[in-house]
Length: 424
Image (cartoon, rainbow, N blue to C red; front, side, top):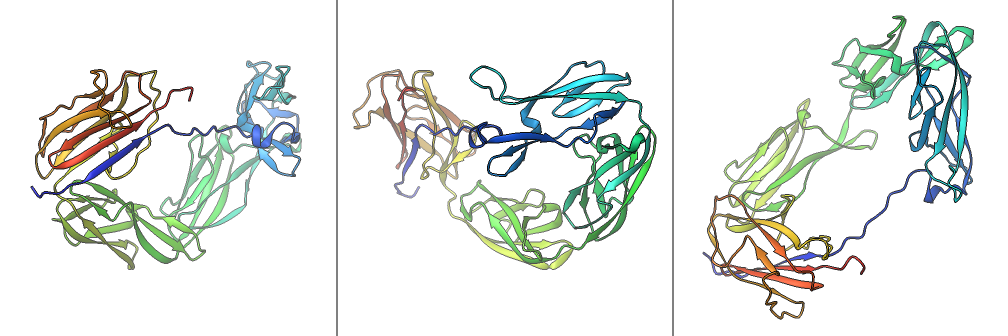
């Protein structure tokens, strides 16, 4: 084995936690909210159908935000109608029902910042026709747009019945349309051409059609992006193709549209389905990718496999960590005697562990059996080809800073830990 010396560091310290807040709080506080509005045009709703209520918050700076999904919704009589995030499901019984929504944020009195109750009369209304909006559609290959189905009922009433319709594409090779509960009316262009999308009311079979033109997508540039270009045997790198369209949009292409090749499979192989390149031996390999429907579009990238004898290190989530790269961890020294869990794996040669030691931050050895390594001992032989060896770093809660070190043959490995009390 070559007489090389490498010093490796992993830094472990507390992480800053970022709190996320809902649309109605903090950055858009209740003091800035001027009023709420909704999309309703009538107090009547048809029986045996769903009706969507969208609620919008209007702020002092003139901005408007859809807050429907941030509200608490309730129905006064669930035998008449239920409500979920603004979607009212009216049953067959007729009568009046109250639908309420309120903010989750509370005032100092404990009441909601804002609350409103809407009264609806559930009526037996007949559907006469369906209007699709927009009435025609022109999209590019890969683009998508959601179509709304408007039901025209008795008394000149109109309601969004998108979720009550069954959606169908006459030619799914050109354009597809969603028909599940959360994708109804969502049209995506697949291939240049023309087709018809049909929305059919599930209760009456009344339908309406939409003409869809799908335009060819043109690329002006086409390049490979790699998560890393230098790596070691057994390691992998994820490849993507980033293309710029004729409308200056940058998109990541799906691998089903691409063909990948390696000019040196003994050094590096590539999975054509996932575009993951795996290093097999030291050396270089040139990766080439083609666009299946236009082979004139191609790009190449040279990848370098630089080590075939080394030790791999993984965290407890089995994510590989470079020894030379600082990693961040968060610990509460009072809650658990285990600071961290790692695993190591030998590649290309066998390695022997020695000189395991735990010291304080001033490098004074800690003579305490409750501080040190579990699962890793002096003299342990880590053999190439064996499964990973897992070990833990333990402590007894009496030290704010501990340095864990060990030797891998003539290569020095150092795991540096700085952990803080929860009150620090």
